[in-house]
Image (cartoon, rainbow, N blue to C red):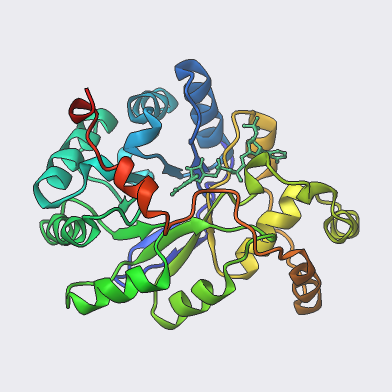
Length: 289
Ligand SMILES: NC(=O)c1ccc[n+]([C@@H]2O[C@H](COP(=O)([O-])OP(=O)(O)OC[C@H]3O[C@@H](n4cnc5c(N)ncnc54)[C@H](OP(=O)(O)O)[C@@H]3O)[C@@H](O)[C@H]2O)c1
């Protein structure tokens, strides 16, 4: 087995999160996910990102078990879905996630979106953290105003905010706010989710040639230069490996400056302030029948 990919960032409570993880969004085929996870562990990945709504927590547990890796060597993240939010419901959802993942703790638990009950949900996460059932807590898809609202509660602050980020949508204002407030920036869709033409952009193609790297590796390195945690998803072992080979070179300040030309300010994912979507997705499935 190769060396584990252990380069990490310290959260404000001292917990270390590996800078690179495997995202498993849209991995709906159990055997495919299991094979991807086993390949990732073999390559050296020690960080995995799932969510209740992905419907694959059990598959991830199977993949990790079959890989033979011990629980303590893995950094495991999951997220509370919108219709499970609220104080009591979140605690139940957390236990169900633990059961599906076949573990008795999580390394990181996130509020998936700032759905209407996110403040009560945060209160539950703080208690789970204080009880030692999760090593770190954070949020996802939170805007500055959501983070400011949490600050007013005079509870702990999130350690991480996992947000859509790629060179076309760098989220500079939110990035700076998080830096000032000690919140680590974790990028979802770090490669643009396969929805962009980023890989063919001349700036990226030229840098790829200069460093003998692929466009995907240039993009992932761009995130790392910005101090972000990355969780690229792939079901292909060769790409999982490619995405891990980003710790042996760096981009210069000038090259980072050139990459700014790719910023279109347009997101591919949902708008975190789309209240109608947040309300709709907060209705529990049994209540819609
Ligand atoms: N918090 C949230 O709301 C949220 C939302 C979305 C995602 N996420 C998390 O973030 C993770 C990553 O985001 P994502 O999966 O949406 O998008 P992504 O990682 O940016 O892109 C994944 C896509 O890129 C392809 N790909 C991966 N590596 C590649 C490479 N080296 N060269 C060419 N293509 C490559 C994959 O295809 P193949 O699989 O076919 O290789 C897949 O189509 C997710 O898996 C999930 O864990 C969180």
